[in-house]
Length: 81
Image (cartoon, rainbow, N blue to C red; front, side):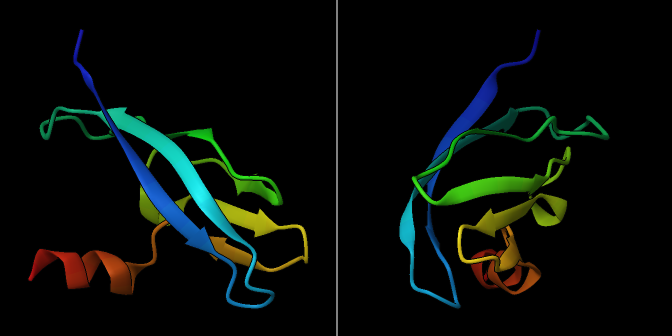
């Protein structure tokens, strides 16, 4: 069984400024087609809009109604540099 990478990410709603830290994990095996991404804990005021096996397609919803990806494509590109 593969180990899971665990990490924290600060979420900030671009509409109302609600923020907090989310805990997430995914399988640590680059050969897997689906990393099994999972949001394990969300801060108060945030909810899972759409669960997915990938960070880029997991959608979060703020209590104000704004929806946004857990990890935007622009953020993932910036981290590769």
